[in-house]
Image (cartoon, rainbow, N blue to C red; front, side, top):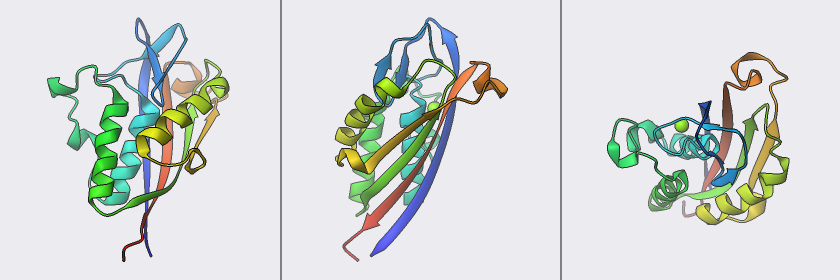
Length: 161
Ligand code: MG
């Protein structure tokens, strides 16, 4: 059995007047993430981890931020395209582990919803996707609530070879 590992990282700035979308779930908060798309850092980190495992670059290559086509894009739709790429290359997702680093708001009540949305989009079981939420203990830009970042690790399996 062939296996592949990939890791992904993303960070976006927190600003007023934007929605906060994490893992495809809209979370009530006074600030939202700034970006060309919906700026869903968790979904972006997962996409980069998948592309990394495939050895196929990163999301900036597939969905260039200067392309008006991706203006305000729903990152879950972009993730769907990346998953199709994974399957078309003959790979299956083994599991995904991820961490969101945010000082506020409290994310724990929303983690299950995020896992449900992501598992459905990725065509995997909920226990194949884990999401952890932590703060940065008030340290650095994330600790000062200037942004939110996310990390993801993915394992791909190729059972055909
Ligand atoms: Mg991003």
